[in-house]
Amino acid sequence: MSGFIDPDHRSSRRRVAASRVKSTLAVLLSLAILGGVGFVAYTKFNDIVGVLDLAPDYEGEGGEKVTVTIPMGSTTADIGDLLVSADVVKSTQAFLNAVREHPEVVEIQAGTYSLRAQIPAATALEMLLDPENALRNFIAIPEGLRLSQQLERIADDEHTDFDLEVLKDVVKKKKNLDLPKWAPNAEGFLFPDTYDAPEGTEELDLLKRMVAEFNRVAEEIKLVDRADSLGLSPLQLVTLASIVEREAGSADPDDRARVARVIVNRLAKDMPLQMDSTVHYAVNDYSTTTTTDEQRAVDSPYNTYEHKGLPPGPIAAPGRAALEAATSPAAGDWLYFVTVNLDTGETRFAVTYEEHEANVALFQQWCQANPGKGC
View 1 (spheres, rainbow, N blue to C red):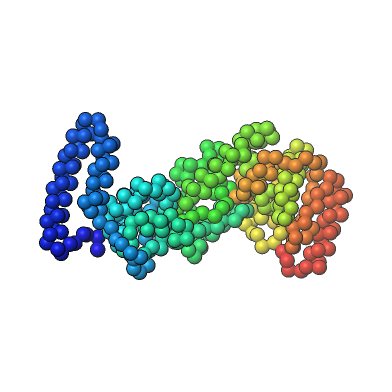
View 2 (view 1 turned 30 degrees about the vertical axis):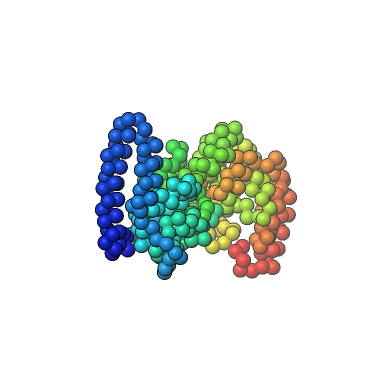
């Protein structure tokens, strides 16, 4: 149905005449361009094309539902061609004419859309601009996952078709991801968020968007400058933020900044951080909140019970709140903290070891009263 057919003989003759006029207009347009009035001539040309019905268009409400996928990077003409192929609009020119009246066409996003067959081009444009017609695939990546967990989450998403092995191969190629120059690898730099993944999205495209989002947030919060003011490298600051993300499970958003302060204070005093979250990363075991004596003795640079200072890199992907907390730790002299209720995330902070021991006793009481809840 993408051609224009008129069985009436007189209409056919008119069409032949129109074709001749169109050819003549094309010549005139070329001459006009040479004469310096190209824009005006082009506009008039398009207007006359519409009058002569050289941009056939459907009328009415249309027919059955049609699904159309618009790839990333499609031009307006590309979209028109796709709509013609799906028999949504009658001609690409009709769609281009409709677009001229609606500059908001730039808001059309790549993705899959539910449209109707054989509808006017203006109606098709309206439907593409209506978010209700977008059949998008969204992938939600929560904060606090290590890189391998992020890739598994992406590959396991039921609405998409990403391959885990391809994802693993892509993250090995640092240059392709546009990572910060100071990032040794992708661990901690695939920003946790909800991403739109239209049909046809490649693994590299998605991962590059995740890194780009990290770079955008880092720029907004002035991560590099703040790291310097704290006496840390940018990588160390992201590493600190990743520990904050894993350790601060409270509903109180201020606890993130307090945890960041504890880490900064312990670093300043050359105390080992002794964070269970870093041990979980070292042994790749997240089945419990606490760690065992055996786990805390593991030989790993990520074991902050055995090694002073920050681990060599992030242990998870921090979200914006954790990154902001790391760049602006709360004011305080705390050296210890412990979550005393795993259900609510209530966390107690202490300056002295004696105060901390009392808080640990509260946590142990909670664990005894709530067996099997990850203690």
